[in-house]
Amino acid sequence: MENKRFGRTRALLGEENFARLQKSSVMIVGLGAVGGYVMEALARAGVGRLVLVDFDKVEESNINRQILALGSTVGRKKGELAAARVRDINPACEVVVKDMFVNAGNLPELLAEPVDLVVDAIDSLNPKCCLMEALLQKGVPFISSMGAALKTDPSMIRLQTLDQTRNCPLARFIRKRLKRRGCDLKKIVCVSSDEVVSVPSGALFMEDKPSDGGRARHTMGSLPTVTGIFGLVIANEAIMRLSGRKS
Image 1 (tube, one colour):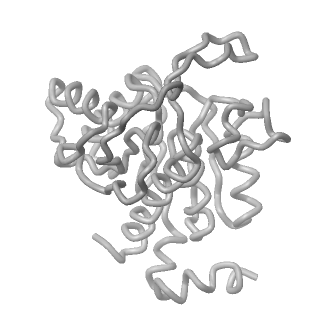
Image 2 (cartoon, one colour; image 1 turned 180 degrees about the vertical axis):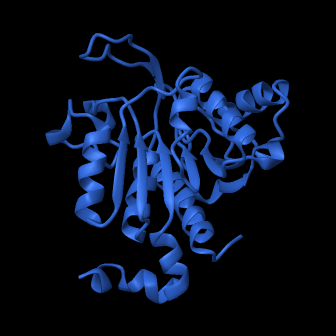
Image 3 (cartoon, one colour; image 1 turned 45 degrees about the vertical axis):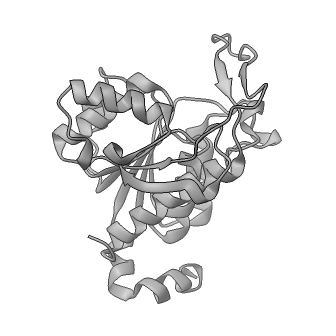
């Protein structure tokens, strides 16, 4: 069964490189629009161990762009859904679920988990900066996602270092914060879009108050295509690195 399941990946990467992929461990922090597609691609590529970190539940507003979000999954935990999906794709994959909201206080516990690579798909500024700074300090390889909202042009999506990013407000805020903390921006690999955005009327709006009683928040329009491409570009880079096809 496994030969058929991963035969095309093995054929392209080669036996030795595919074996490296099967022995690799990846942590994905955030299982939303970008992180969900990273998870999907890494599971289908045959990565041997996935640590999936998310505290959130699926909301109806997630359905336009998140791979885990369906009418039948609204209200369910993303981590639980992700684990079941990965095991259905690859029963041999070891899945660890961390049901937690990442912050400075629980980062030591989270990063005690041994992994070869971390994917940062967090969409909140403070936790994102704390995670990136901690990963740099520990020397753990990682790839980070910048902002995909309001972007529409796939040709402008780039894999680059944080200091090279352009026309991304999230990246700009992160650069300022991490520079103040003494972080080397040239060591942070990320996926971002260089597209100059002309914000259409209505693309920025106040989301309805969540059913769990949380606060309503400002949000931005986004497409399933661009967010998905962000995730797949990250996953492709991870596969190339972990398999040994790219150092």
